[in-house]
Length: 166
Image (cartoon, rainbow, N blue to C red; front, side, top):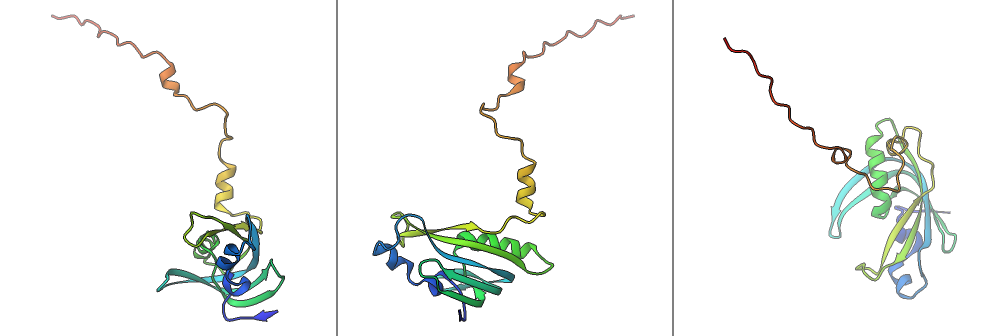
């Protein structure tokens, strides 16, 4: 297993754009399994735009050839990075455990010819806000919601009672 300065799809798997162009990747293809503990997120900007690097302990497995890498710094595709960044920012007590399978999906509408997808490998924690919210939602219905007020006849106005005058 190689220890490297930083982990990313490119350092673990190579040039995905070339693989898609050569049709080595067809359809949604798992390319990298990455997992570890992220203790903080560092945000920056480069000539290529904004970036987020995670600091912690990380391991990645290239799912195309089986090679493994470890690093203390990790760059993830936005689809996974956005989720992990939120969890790390919300966790003041320490590090966040995570695991993702990263997939490359050829996409002609993308400027680079592909997009990434991510599948989470770790069950949500019991204090997972999204899971708690989902459990409190009403079940979906087959019928569209109706306006209950519109189904009832409009109330009729009552004439004011006559008062006696002296």
